[in-house]
Length: 333
Image (cartoon, rainbow, N blue to C red; front, side, top):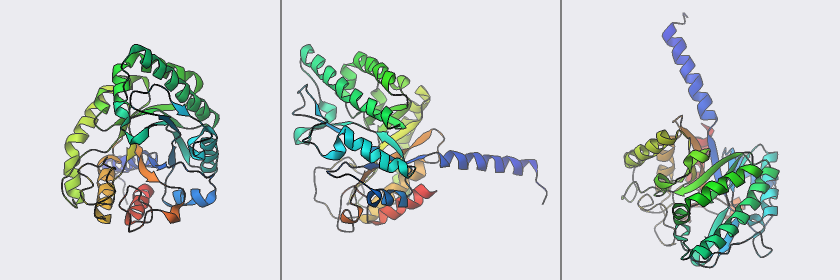
């Protein structure tokens, strides 16, 4: 067969496309537990074709205006501590799975971290000192375990907007102890206002965008719902010339799951396994083909695979549901 110039060009672009796709972050948000992990817990991650996991150590504050963060305590679950992160990371790295360390704050009673705000300069200073100690502990740990990505914060909008100079200085301090890539996990309605995207490597978004009010929207309907959000994401990407990383994405297996995808307070709701499948398929269709899109971390994955999820579960995990097979096929691409 004679190979023409147009055919050569087509083959070249197909090769480039395949290479781009093979480099995507096909991640899982791996939930911390009381236990150490071993191959029993890492093998299901490999089976779903994931090449990255996000490990999430936690710090705790009592209320939205409390400035002191408690972290790396003997009272916490093993996986939430520095030692736990190291043990989890080493088990995954044995299997060739890469690591993002994503420290998070938990406010007692589960209040939204984006509303954390101090009401005096004195309290802001205490919070900043406490957060710096917390985040540098895990930045140093990330360097020690050779983590590929470090997330400097998760959904902290008021803290970020009201203290921009602090965050600029914090990034410089993190760079002194950690040499890998940096991101920040902005909430879906926050990412347009983050002032330090130029200083880090990925524009991180927790991608719980509202995209449909239907009970079981089709993949096509969901993709239509993505259009205005994708336009805004593309605008920010072009403005900063940084790759987009979905630091979290996912859908509950429940009716109307794309109306308020972030909504977790209500454990009620009719189980809808197809709605979860459609949500994962649509987000993959819209973003994984884009050169400027780095990939993402599905929310969320538990270590005891056989004991969670299943057809009677309406929560986020895809485990033991049709969504798990969907995710495996999408990540395998």
